[in-house]
Image 1: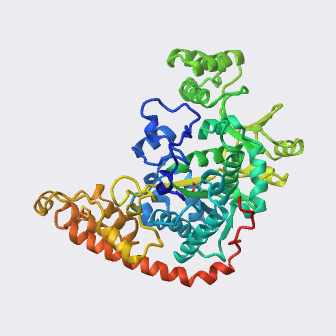
Image 2: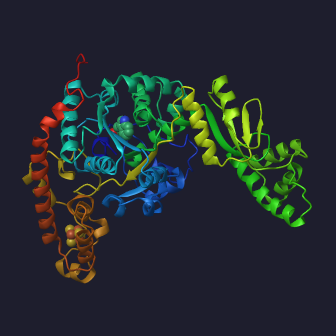
Image 3: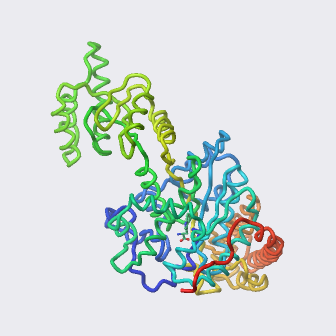
Length: 531
Ligand code: TRP
Ligand code: SF4
């Protein structure tokens, strides 16, 4: 999330709506789940994020994560893209990185703590950890002055260090202060154009150029950990940042020298067409094998099969006509290297490096013996040898937004709805005591029916923060609540005390790490004219 719910409301009825899939989202309900990095961030229905935007469920990779963080175990981290890559690297002791960014628009609060914890955990698991201050974004998209930015940036960094980030092992930077990031942003910007930003973020003719620059800067942030060496990189954020993650994944691929895809014949096919080809191949190769006459599956046979078996649509019609044109050419699965941005020497070098049976075309190479993974690896090696970046597509993990303490969403304009990491511990105590709960109208009913822990902001505080790593404790609160043994008064008293202790301790630690921050390699005072 980085910036979370609290700031978004302040944006007076934003007309910048994200349509993260470039405008093809299903009409039905697409609005409730529009993911907008600068808009309002209530997520009406997390399931739609899976169905419509292709975010994957975290539970499905959880078993592959060594010693998962409690936010993962408790489903607070609910979704991901390509996190398996990162989990694999952890398991195999290979390099990986984690990076997230924070817009210094206000005080860091308990929502930001989730992201701090996620970065720190990846650092403790052996990853290269990065945290950046998105000062260009805060200045251009939120109109923050440089003085405000400096104050908030310092507060974010102190909390991050207080929670355990090791600045000697990890990297801290601000967007405005890092030349490498700016150079990379410039290069990435050459692969994106205005229409695309318009589609993704709803930018218009009124959008400032600096705001657009902050977008390519974020793209550079996301790929920054790979500048020295490509590696799996996870970006822990709230789901509102998914449009950024998707664009970064696209740009990483577009910057590449080679694209690697599956193919079935010499002609080009898109994703949908490839699915039809795969189906035809699977069906017909079984038949061919059963016939045992050594005859290959031919394109024209596949054309007949697809025309018979599949419902007519554009993809079907176009692949059938391509197959007819290819006629007697055998249909054979292969891995294809497409020349995207390769220099001539790099393309030649790749031809030489592909082992086993291959066919070389004007702008692509087909390999019949390499697996897709081997092919991707090889393409990356050749690219790196010839001076390219060789980016690995960045991964992401998404956590749920916390409910506001007053019900509804957390908002920085409603101080009672959230707890700042800088709140006076006694105010923290009071806010928890005053929070909305999932309790019943009377103690009697509560004993009889149990509380609604799943709808209770106080329970969220326990699960997301107050019980820390202690699953037993979290479960006890939950079970006692829904079982009717726990009543809201005592429950809130306990939570309020824990919150007060947490804030006291955190604030003490913030003081202790001040020196550490002074020594860290990050500029704390903007050297900019006040504008
Ligand atoms: N856009 C993010 C926010 O709204 C901040 C950010 C900038 C960021 N660069 C990033 C987040 C890179 C994750 C990765 O808070
Ligand atoms: Fe929420 Fe606690 Fe009340 Fe249950 S008992 S509804 S967890 S405040």
